[in-house]
Amino acid sequence: MSDDQQVTAAPGEGAPGSVLPPRLTLPEVTPDPARPAWQVVHAIASGFADAAGVFVLEELLGGGHPPGRAAGADLARVVVRRLAAESAAGGQLASRAAFPPGEVIAFAGRSPYARCLHDRTPVIFARPDGATLRHVTPAARTALGRYTSFLAAPMMTRGSAIGLLVLARGPGAPGFGGTDTHTAADLAARAGAAIAGSLALMRHQSVAEALRPPRPAVSRVVPHRLEIAGRCLPAAGYRTALALPQATLATCAYAVIDPGRQSCVIATAGHLPPVLAMPDGTTRVLGLPGGQSLGVGLASYGQAGVKLVPGTILALYTDGLVETRIRPFDQGIRALRSALTRQHRHLDATCEHLITSLAEHREDDVTVVLARIPPGPAAASA
Image 1: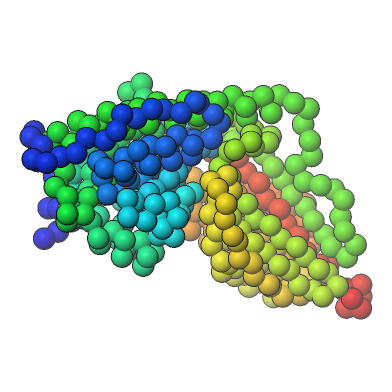
Image 2: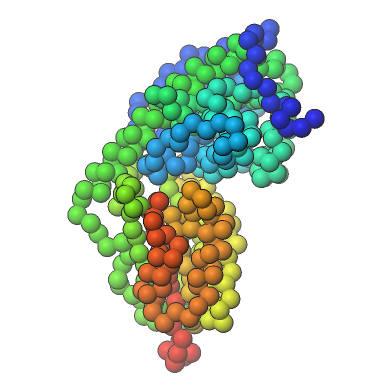
């Protein structure tokens, strides 16, 4: 049976034995959208469902607006960020291992998750679609296999979908039915209202930060035997934020370069991978240990050591440089690698070239930082 055959519209009658959740009391609105998300999943996973997860549209965390409604052949993939997930059996700690908060997921347009957002209505399905299962981790696939009934409900506010609430039940509970969809829709609406309030407060704080006197985007203090250049530009015609407000979800790439040892240690938190451009014109994307985004709770982060021979450029960048509405980030990274294959005498000029060639119209904020141990006698004697 295909994945589409496993997805059904919500029926009109609920299954006998359905369990109502405790009354959901929404928390005080704060600039941290993860806070109401955790309270929602904790309330739901204690009886109404065996597991629950809350996802928000990724573009809203950057200050964007909810997308318009799509239908039919125009169904597009949906990119969301998991704010919280909890299971009745393992609680938060067990859920974090398989479903880490802050993880960014792209659901295929025909998946039940995307359909509930496109159609603005709850969707019941027996198992996740094949594309979703192929892209999640083995631990997540194992965890999802324990459940036999799923329900995805859009979180709506003022007629727009801002994310979704996903519920799951195991074989010991009745499958989701029509009555459950009404309850889930109400829960999703309450959760959506709280998270929308958090997003609004987050944007307001960003605007307040943006009105402060600007600071240099990249420090001009260059360590001995190291070249550094960078640019930080707002989206063209969109909003700008010069600093992230407290408790905001954020990605990060952190690099420590030792010119004397010609080495670099790098760690990332939910960030796109750095790119190395070697003096011979070859490039490679660094494979680094994964880590959840900052602002979603306590976490540990791995690091990787990289040999940085003189003349090699280390490129750090945000998704605004490589991703647009019509260009996925993997294609953008290939374009970045291509642009870095040419000879680069001055890193400042290279930054300008990267922005003009890859992000001329800037649909999102763009940050790019380039670092290089300069070739020559100084590097050779280090």
